Image (cartoon, rainbow, N blue to C red; front, side, top):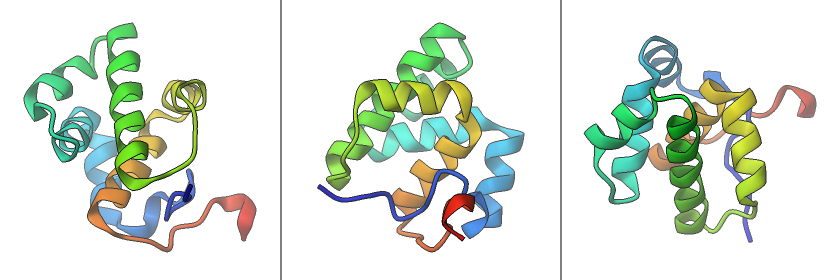
Length: 108
């Protein structure tokens, strides 16, 4: 299995995605869902609904991992979405955009 091209805190590999996510995380959540073949509007709206949002973003992150051959687990995805929502959404979006290079702060 592979790894993410960007670290969890590698948000600044693309400043545009970072800014959009911090201003409208539901947009990035929807675009991530669209990348795995789900409804952009539905999952964008679901992402704003507390526990339902956690479930929907975790589900999409799992589908992203499967599609990209990235190792991980549902529990790890859930914890990342819960505690680092914006960074994990950016990491996922960067994976779909094919952008690499933003490493985790701990790796520098």
